[in-house]
Image (cartoon, rainbow, N blue to C red; front, top):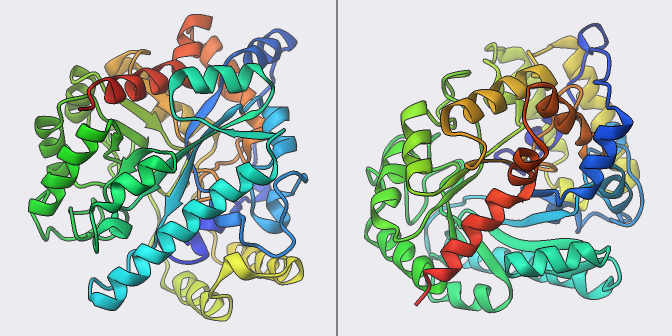
Length: 404
């Protein structure tokens, strides 16, 4: 999975009884407010769950048992109306075979998302525009936007971007954990020093098609170049604050301001490894590598195999504990970003089912806790409406309005 097959999917489960705080209290008034807001998340890795044998998005699951954080019952409980379901493709070799694999992998994930919608038309509906999202949510269905994380499925044939758009793609993340055929990653050594020629062409084509560009995971050089090259605002769909934790995936205050000045939005993530510094632990890494070698394809595990995997992972966490972010730390990132750029340029993209989740915010059922903390910090209902979906939909609408 992301970036290693299983470690990120399990990262949000690393809790230790001694460090777990009391759950954040949510007042009845806040819960009612949260439920009437349009609540969208800009980065859901739930398509990774759709291939699991026996896994059903209509059934309630337990994060501690099978790792999944998003399903229909918990979406309803947490007031999550939907969001951007990501076509995530692991970065492989950039030879002919690797490019062909990435192309096929991306299209297969696209089909899984469309199939989820088509099989359950009373529960889910495809959204392409901001108006679609509002209409779908008002009908009681869940909103499914489609995004791409890592543009490598387009490397063999960039014109496939139009195919994806016709099938519902609305957001394009250029790169992931390793540099690809278009751009440098924030977590890799510079290869292209930003965008290469194919990357610049891809940015222009996304603008022309009205596809929102996503700079999460991109290097600072890529972000700077995209802000200059793009004719419309862009988004960081799941990033956090470099000022709070100096991880290369996080955005510094200067770039936050540049993103906002362009009209863009940063969606703050709940990915613990980006929120708090990690402690080097070779023995833990060795144990995780051995576990990963035994469970190479988490998406194909039976329910019994999944339970065994998570039990063994819990034992590794007990033997080799790592620092874990909690709701307080997530709120430090969120409130800092809000202070820097204001509530009209901030949203939430927790990275659910892709490694997101912190102590006290383990799955989507607990989202009202964030609304309570925002209200406690002095933000208004209007601010919450902007943070939970208004800003995201505005930047999408502006990207689409600039097409042509």
